[in-house]
Length: 446
Picture 1: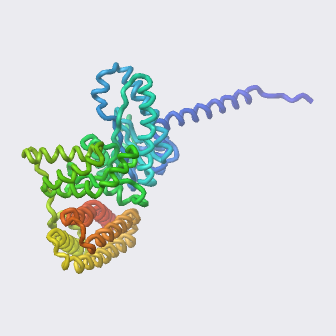
Picture 2: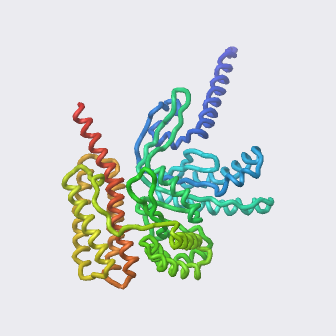
Picture 3: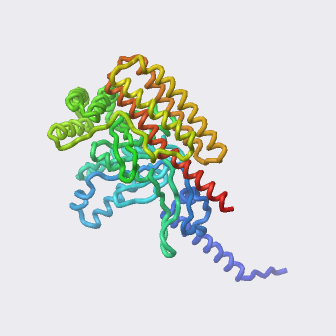
C-alpha cells in the first residue's frame, strides 16, 4: 500500500527548525550586550522577562581598569585607528575576565567595569592575569612598531544594587552604590601613585587569606560625598621579580615613612623614603611621596592626620546599646593610640584587654541582632569582625614587645583599629540600620 506524505508537514518542520535557530542566534546576540550571568544574578532566566526597575542587592567586588594616557594616545590616531586599537586591546582582556568568573558590566571608552560576584580573591587573580596578558599584547605592539601601553586597576568590595535603569524605549543593566564609586576612585589613584593595582580596605578584609598576596598600605583618601576616609593598599604581585622582592624587604620602612608623612614629620618621612629608593630605585610610589614631601616643605601642600577621632552624631546606629558600645570602643582606641605614641607601655595592657573584651561583646550583640532579623549580609559583616580581631592580634603582639617605632605603631593603631571602627560604623553598621528601618516600616504598614 502506498504511503502518502503531506509536503506541508515537511515544510512546517523546516520552518520550526529555522525559527528555533533564529531564536537561538538572537538570544546569543543579545547576551553579548546583556550577559546571561548578569541576568542570573537578577534572578531572570529569559531576557524577554527583563523589566525596568528590576533590582537586587548583594555583595560584589567591582574592578575598574583604564588605559594610561589614552587621550593623548588617541589624538595621534584617526577615528578608524582608534576603534581598531581599542578593540584589539579589549578583545585581549574580555576572556581573561571571563576565565576568572568576572562579568563585564560595561565598556566606558578605554575603561572596563567588571563584577566579581563570588570572590574578591578572584578579582585580584584576574587583575594579575590582565597585567600578564598586557605584557603579551605589548610585545606584539612593539614588534609592529607601536609603543607599549600601561593600565591601572582599582578594586573594591561592598554591597551594591544590580538592576535595570532607563526608560520604556531604552534600558540598561547596571550596578550602583558607594562600592562602585570607590572602585572607580581607586583606579584613578593608580595614575597618581604610578602603580598598576590598588585595592580598598574592604577588599583586603574580604579576602579568604591575605597572607599569600604582596600588599602594602599606600594612603588614606577622602572620597567625595563620603564622611569617612578610606585606607588604600597597593598590590604589587605583578611587579617584576627584583622590584617585588625589594618592596617586600622595605615594606615596613615604607609604611614608617608614610606614617611620618601623614603626621607631618616630613624630614623623618624623607629619610625613610630615601632608604627605600636605595634598595628599590623603581619604586614609583616612594618617589611620588618624596615629591609630596618637597611640596610640603615648600608650603604647597598640608597633609595632617589626627591620631584620635572624636565621636560624631552621624556615627549613631539608632540602637542605644550598640551606640554606647561603639562610643566606648572609640574612646578606648583613642586612649591606646595616645599611650603608644608617648611610650606609656604600662597603660597598654589593660587598654588592649578592655578593647578585646568590649569588641567581642559588641560584635556578638550585632551578629545576634542580624540573625534574629534575617539580615542577608550577616556573613559579610561577620567576616569584617573576624578580620578586625586578626589585625588586633598582630597589633597586640607588636605593642606587647614594645620595640617598634612608636610613631609608626601609633599610626597603625589609628589606621587598623580607630579608622576601621569608624568606617565599619558608617558603612556596614549603617547598612544594617537601614535594613532594620525598612523592615519596621513594612511591619507598621501591614
